[in-house]
Length: 143
Image 1 (cartoon, rainbow, N blue to C red):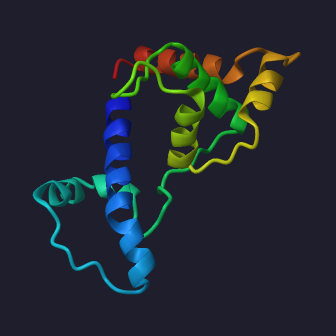
Image 2: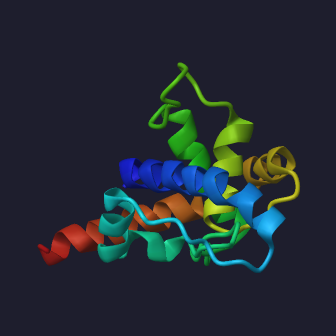
């Protein structure tokens, strides 16, 4: 899934670089360039439907609370599961910038929200525990 996310992200950046300046200058004119073979293939597989043309946002939205988002993706970041292609480690700011854009979620101050999550008096890591239960149930169903 992370490889797919990375491919989609790189495609979107390429798309934005290719069309953003042009759309700002041409405003309401249609894009008359012929799509490449890869763009047609991605369109046919439904891949580009998550990235509407002319929009800076994806069509994906995080459905849980912000603390759950940070709980999950901080664990992924701290496990060193994600890396930048062109350097050893992606910064936390870059990482969360990508994810908040991709999932259309606004988090004011990530560090203070994470600190509040760490200082919870109630159950620690409730979302991660829920995910473990969900995966256990999935495995038990034998799918």
